[in-house]
Amino acid sequence: MNTLGLRFRLSTFGESHGVAIGGVIDGMPAGVKIDLEFLASEMAKRKPGGKYATPRKEDDEVEVLSGVFEGFSTGTPIGFVVRNKSQHSKDYDNLRDLFRPGHADYTYWLKYGVRDHRGGGRASARETAMRVAGGAFAQMLLSEFGVSVESGIMNVGEIFGEPSKFDFEHADGSEIFALDRDAEEAQKALISQVREAGESVGASVLTRALGLPAGLGEPLYHKLDGVLGGALMGLNGVKAVEIGEGVNAARLRGSQNNDFMRSNLNRAVFSSNHAGGVLGGISTGEPLLIKTHFKPTPSIFADQPTIDKSGAEVVCALRGRHDPCIGVRGSVVCTALTRLVLADMLLLGAASNISNLKKIYGSQGVQI
Image 1 (tube, rainbow, N blue to C red):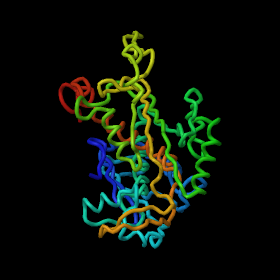
Image 2: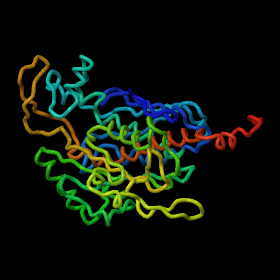
Image 3: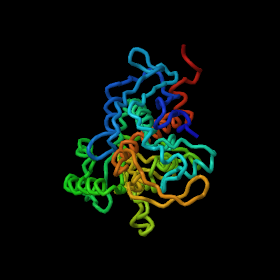
Image 4: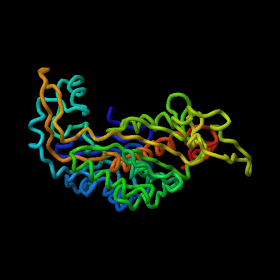
């Protein structure tokens, strides 16, 4: 499937070395102010180039095709594209018949019997530019309700930041979105080191959503944490996702993991947030906290043993342009995917009880 969401839906299309990549958002309410400068600024965070990313140069300028009129959403599908301008497809000619270790080449071939070997085709991280664009549109809706989403790098390989020093404002201005300014230079040095060695390194991202209302998420089959986990695990290179304490909860006692409550104006105030803002798959109103863990980029420049389409054992000698640490730009996509899920949950929650519906339609039906 190429669509995320039930009420606020993003569908994407295109390949890494195709003419363009694009997306369609369906479900954006009419009357939302569309901020194209904000859209461009979000795309700039993810776009390739720079010292710590792939040297591929792309403008990543979003061309909005529909669904916007005089600066506001019309309620109809928002279509948009980004033209690919810097494909070096010949760099991948030697990969036409072999499978790159750690990539989706082999599984795509098994599933479809055909694959686009140029940069990975649909499996390339190039497609995530459309998720960032979609996430920017989602944020325009979330901003109407005071909801913000931000991400940053917790660690690069074995270089960990100190959680007590995590600063999302600093991360927003960091070249590698580092949360801990004191760990940033060592993290940058490690990325540069592995790049020079033709290697790669993994990273972990912390995403935080603030201002989220309580009550978002559907019981059983569309839980907030379940959908977030599915969306983020669907991101290229992600191998694990945690909500709140995550795996650490398995080491705790109930008295350590429970978030005790007291009352303030008849609403719960939590003494801690081990749950990460989600209980029973539904938001508590506390900050939503998500950890996303990226594997090392499988694109490395050492010779690697593999097989080709005929089953013969061959050597993969990679060329092309690749990120030494996909978690860096991946952090921007984590923000975008969280925004998309939250926008969807916001719309789903609008019809969760009769009181909400009566606020919209009134007890006597629609007022014209």
